[in-house]
Image (cartoon, rainbow, N blue to C red; front, side, top):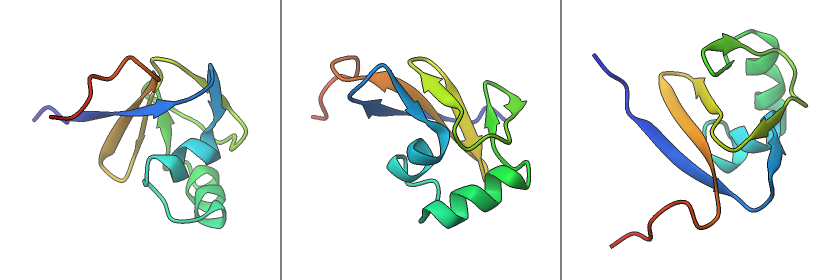
Length: 81
């Protein structure tokens, strides 16, 4: 079964992984981000990532807990109808 990938917009060219997990509502707190990343439960572009400070850039796909989100720049996502 193909998993849906949702787009999450960032303002700058990059964002730290821990911050992005919170922005995308994949986790609830920085402490939870630290834990799931350290436990190897987060992938970036299909590779396990254990660095909370990893810089994500436009186009990166982050997955955790069965959800996948793509980093997109402001203006790259069409407005909701």
